[in-house]
Length: 220
Ligand code: DX5
Ligand code: ZN
Image 1 (cartoon, rainbow, N blue to C red):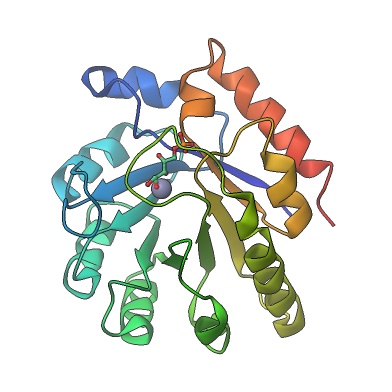
Image 2 (image 1 turned 135 degrees about the horizontal axis):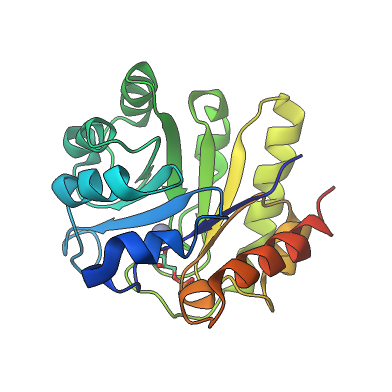
C-alpha cells in the first residue's frame, strides 16, 4: 500500500505562489482548501485561483471543497485543472450523482466527513469514490489540534475498504504533524494532509520526507 503526502497550501504566502509550490515539489499532491464562508466560517478561493495554481504546480492538485452546493460547483474545479476533487457529505444533495460526474470528467472523486458526521452510511457506496477524507479537525482553519478520537472512524473506514477489495484512499486532514501522523497511519490512513507542519518548517522538503517515513513505518 502506498503513502501519499498532500501538503495544504492554506497558510502559504499567496504572493509567491510559484515559489511556495516549489517548496512542496517532493510531495505527492498539493492540497488546496476551497472555503465559501457559508459551509465554514472562512473564505479562501474559487476555481479561477485553482486554475492559476494548477498552471504553476509541479505536482497534481487535490482540492478540498468546504462549500455549500458542491453539486453545482465541484465540476468547475475539474475544469480548472484539479486531478482530485473532494466534497463534503454534509453539503451535497446527491453524492452518487456528483461522484459519477467528477469521475466522468476524468478526476478522482473524494467524499469528506466532518468530525461529528458518521461514516457508516457512506460505506455502502464506497465503490463510487476514489478517496474518503476523515477530518481530524473542524474544517475552516489551519493550525488546529489533531482530534485523536477520530481514529476509530479511520479504522472502521479502513476495514470496510479492505473488505471491499477496492483501492479507495483514506485521507486525514487537520493537525497532522510528526507527533500525530503515526496515530493516523496505525489506524489505516494512507493519504496525509499537513499544512502548518510543512509550511512552518524551515526545510519543507525535509519535513515532507520525515512525515512520509514516519507514516510508512506503520503501513500494514
Ligand atoms: C482545515 C483544512 C486543512 C488545513 C490543515 O479546514 O481543511 O487542510 O489547512 O492545516 P493544518 O495541517 O495546519 O491543520
Ligand atoms: Zn483540507
